[in-house]
Length: 75
Image 1 (cartoon, rainbow, N blue to C red):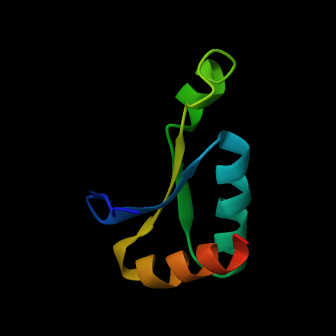
Image 2 (cartoon, helix red, strand yellow):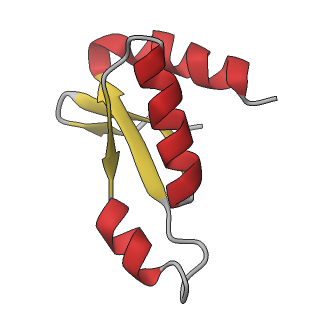
Image 3 (tube, rainbow, N blue to C red):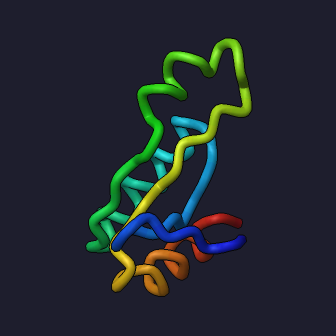
């Protein structure tokens, strides 16, 4: 996955709203602060656009650890 930077935030996951919520919870339980981007738009459009993606964003400093946590849980 190509890393995209949004100021001091980086994308570590992209998926549906429910997947993004699960990943955010997983990261937060591992001690990583995470936020969702485009949550509202996806929730409104997802019945019509099933590809509406929600991004899970973390601080650049936590990127490596966050990606490790996500990759270990996605089996």
